[in-house]
Image 1 (cartoon, rainbow, N blue to C red):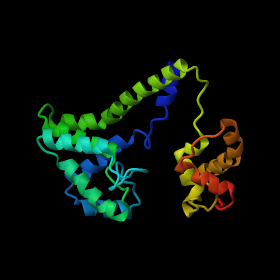
Image 2: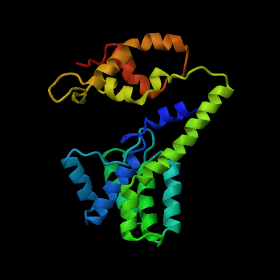
Image 3: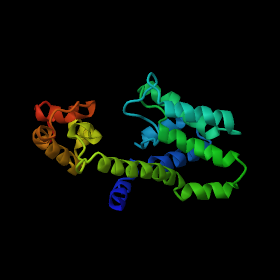
Image 4: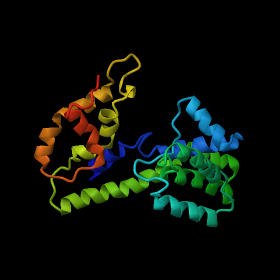
Length: 237
């Protein structure tokens, strides 16, 4: 159990879980610095900086994430003020004009609402709020929730007498981006193939054997990149 839990926790990083702290920092600093949502988006675009807490692979304006809806409505109803949330929603209004799925996602919503809650609840001084946010307490919340999930998965696999779990190759989300986008971003700055792209090609090459070993499974859209690479319609140099 401990080995399973710790190995799962070691997957937490800037792009998985760490988005909460980064989103809180980015939106808080932009709001406190007097920036407007449009200026913030323009600056991020100019500096080629990802806006943490914005964007979802599946959810969009027409298919909203109900977790975001619940958290946002709760904050509006119960918090004394929500200036950082309002700023983030202003950013969302701009980013969604570019693409419908560039919404304020659940990580971003939790992050900005947490900042507003700490600042408006009256329990902390401004200095204490800054300290808490700098300590990575938002990542701590993420780790708590995921730890419960990791333990639950471990117990369920034993209960169901399942062997060591290997995730289906066609449902690994990074495969689509690396093997399916066929864009220059697969190349390193010097023009050679990046290590990640090479790894994607290796996975694509092994995909038929893996698929045969797994038997028939419902395919997810995330496997499209691998299939395209296998069929020769996508060249990774």
